[in-house]
Length: 294
Ligand code: SIN
Image (tube, rainbow, N blue to C red; front, side):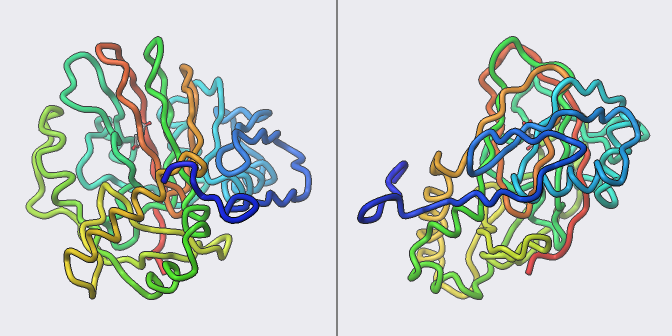
């Protein structure tokens, strides 16, 4: 399947980049035509003007994930940057810094049994109102490795056949936190909750800012399609997961100390690579609350 989105006389998935008005307060350098952009000309440790905030928001909408370099954010600066985009989310399971429940710890070292986000997912999609975005600051990188992959779910949706789009129209899926979170953070001393979130969401959602349709099922949390036999649902989900993993929809971010990635969970999925053991990769995530998918 990979790399095979080819019709007669050209690729089946044709992505056209619409150039908007030029940016005035930041520079935006696309990583691929389909997803990701590096943002320069802005210091996130200082208060941002309204114009800078608007342009960062626009760059996120246009590129799905945006990257910043050389941002030595303190916890308070990181939280303040997140609050510019909405109320902050508290993770239902993951450890956070003492007294700062909105500052999630992202850390793996030689003693870790696992690292965060190793499979394709959209953050906490098991909640009724999953987060709109996540802002990850990595302060300490391993000498090599620890990249994060991001994938464009508008592109994945648009590349489906018209028949598949019709099949998925109006369909919903169950997103479950139970199998993901129970026992997951035991090594950090986090006690399990009696129950973890579970929600039913449309398989294809419409982005509240761009008005575009995107696929909204992911391997991490989505456990079943609603209204079809289990074996059929499992087979369709397997197909969708394979389809959305096509490298054509992806970019790959190579971290350096004090880089920041800000991704839109509504239309992008991500996957972190734990290829750096026994080295340490360490940082924090601030997550911005979102709306109920429609
Ligand atoms: C996550 O899923 O939030 C972790 C991503 C990463 O560590 O790159």
